[in-house]
Length: 350
View 1 (cartoon, rainbow, N blue to C red):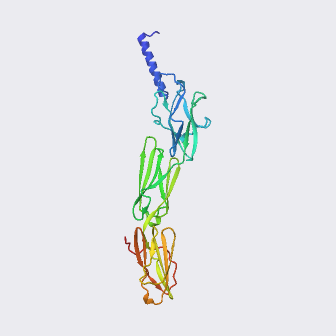
View 2 (tube, one colour):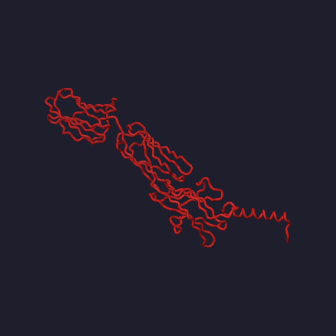
View 3 (cartoon, rainbow, N blue to C red):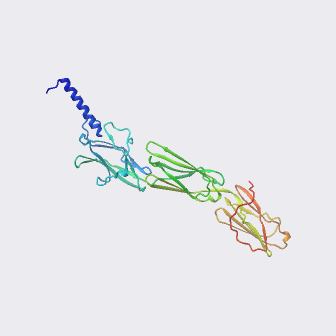
């Protein structure tokens, strides 16, 4: 049976479009050329993000391999990457050549250890037919860098501050969970600030916190879990300045003719403790400190006449202010070691 020339031409056009449709529906490259095995990797060495590595990739292959399967491997083709450890991710390679098909992937980092690993690609099709591309890409993995910072290096007790915990380069599919440790006050408010970039996530969490005097030299820790069960932490030591206060454990005791007074004061910087005695009398003073926030001043004096004893006053001052307290006098009692705790019952004088 012979077809007229016009009809034969129509059949040729139809067959051409059919060939193009079959090729495109099977994942082939754009038809119209005799393609070769080519692989395009954006870089030879790629630094990994916190939790994953993103590898931009594009490839071409002859039309006969259109039903083939791309396999990524680590080191050599004998070690193919498990599907659970990777994810196909289009859009990582830009600009993308028109004759190439994208093969970009995201590799999940399960260990979080510093290391360098090399990856390659092979194509499998037909019956045991393979092609291993020569190109390789090295991925440099590093431990996640978690940063913790303050708006001010020196904090003041009772004044709210902001503590920031941040992960600068994080995988897009990560949902970090941040926990704080080492803080004494419970007056907290947290704000999350994820910022999505093209291929990664910038994440920070701000903690609105009112420090207390006991936070001075405390170690606080920010811990983050992210990615595929990875974690990182950062620790810093707080410097918290506080007004001086005199504790209720401060007291005086008289045994026979020996008067002993102890004034226990707290504050940062460490306060100076003074005894403003009214008379010019002889007395001894001993000062000790825990080097942290507490100063203990002890004075002793001989008492000849009880009527000459006025109520002893302790004065404590540092650059933030001054306070004083009239100490109670316990008669005919042996001085007991103060506990070093309790609340101040004096007013603060700035």
